[in-house]
Length: 187
Image (cartoon, rainbow, N blue to C red; front, side):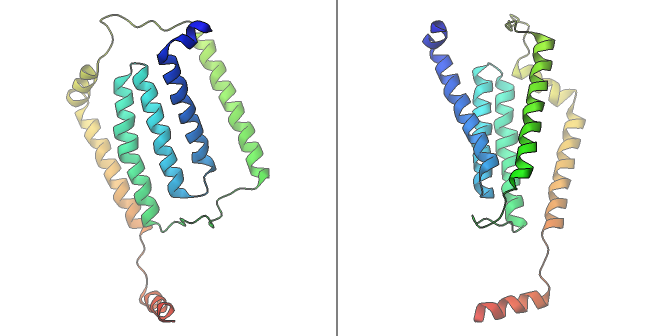
């Protein structure tokens, strides 16, 4: 245990893991939707930093670019166009009768996944393969040469989903609603 504490990298890992865990808890416990999304940015940033510390640079930067750079922006746009309640008065809480079974089910799922991983791989240390590891350049070359058609297809599907979501969520007010809103503003 003393050897573990003497390494600076382990302390950095511990701080990153703690920040990631606390921000993840804040994501699900925040009463404000926008703050929950911002806590999600912090959670994803922490997980990306953990991946970078583990030497998985491609996965770490993918988390930054795809999840933080695109998905979070999509969440914020979705919140803005759907006129979601942004104040603390919005009732987003569930009764305790719904929270307890959800927490128990989550704990059970975590235990099953942990058991499956340990049963499959054991507690053996992972030893990197020298000069045989896949680099980010190899992954990029494969993605943009062998898999370019599926990659572009997925990008168009995501674009169509974004446009469809905006179209469905953004409803224009009827003339009667506009008139009643103007009358409310004059009072």
